[in-house]
Length: 337
Image (cartoon, rainbow, N blue to C red; front, side):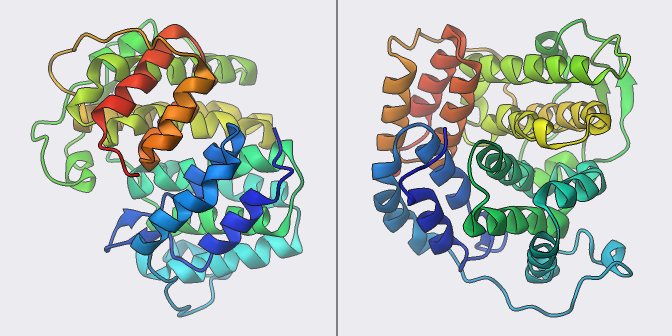
């Protein structure tokens, strides 16, 4: 649903004075969390949540040089150019329809979907969802520029990966992902250890509608898996579900020719996070025992940004196991409010 209160635009305007990262590389989750709060009927809580969260944020860095059609490849993946990239996309989205900008840059950015621990693509997915269902206001267009700029600056391709045995389902594929040898350190150190993923989908013709169906299956499987494996790293493992869901949310705004490569990238992102953080053993979980609305209200009161975003994805999936996974996130992550 669209926000008719103006709360989302007000929150985005507050956030756009800040950069997309803090403390060197931690992501600014504010835009994603406030979009999820508004989307799920919690608009009255947004400004209080931001009051609590905003002290963590840092100012947007200064612009150093202009990104152009001639030099963008050299600037891609350079985090020192975050402000330059944001300014570039602000110009692009001012001069052209936002869908045209997204369609041009999506295939350029997609190979670097692991950028910033997948936060840039997640930020773009939240923004595109809002643009698709509501008015393309100036703060929402600016948010797309910020998300794309962050993605371009942190662009990070995964290492070359060998194919493992095909898996018949997304759930089986995630179960078959081999963990990295050393599950310690930051995500960049862990991703550098990746060597091979199962082949999934097992049989795929490239049909766009099939790509969307498989992507939906992947989001469901990754969300369900958090119920049994989220204890391995309850903050980071949410991205195995929220990253592919961001891609799924963006599909309706993209040319259908981009849906199949989007599935491929989303699978790589979900598998990479799974390999980096998944524990060796599953754990039992209990039914949620609450409605979707009640669970999201609990997530909003809990206040943790990752919990809010994961619960939002779990509600997209909507079945009992997904709701149980949302409850696990609320239980496993420390409250922020």
